[in-house]
Amino acid sequence: NMRKQVIIVRKDLGMSCGKIAAQVAHAAIMAMERTGIFDMQGVTAWKRDDGQIKVILKVNSYTELNDYFINIINANLPVVKIHDAGRTQLEPDTVTCIGIGPISSERIDPIIKDLKLL
Image 1 (cartoon, rainbow, N blue to C red):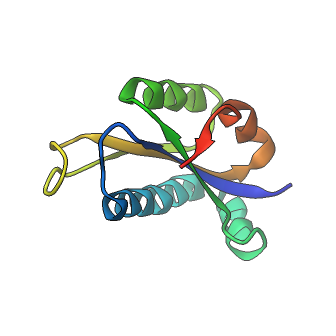
Image 2 (image 1 turned 90 degrees about the vertical axis):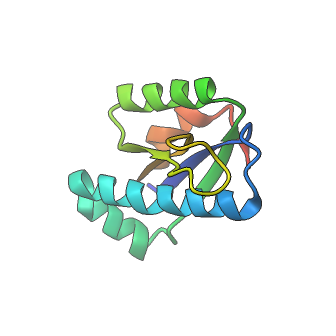
Image 3 (image 1 turned 120 degrees about the horizontal axis):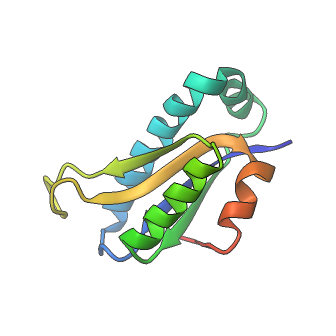
């Protein structure tokens, strides 16, 4: 079964494209590291066989993002919450996005099926 990494980004913060790119990059690395603690074989297979698939989705508020975060934790999936340092566009410690996996599509798709691509 295909593995993928999923990153969910807040669109309500008015981040520039570059800012979003940096936050998504943070999420991708941190989520991969977190997942590797539990499933290094899965991470290796994703890197080697699955083309390092990443799906970037959007939400419109912190509340919505946090609801997904809780649902993902409750599904026992590896997830990280990205907090911005606040040196450029945002207030310090603003949550910008969450990163999930890489994990099998069948485990994450039911949770994220209603979200749209960024």
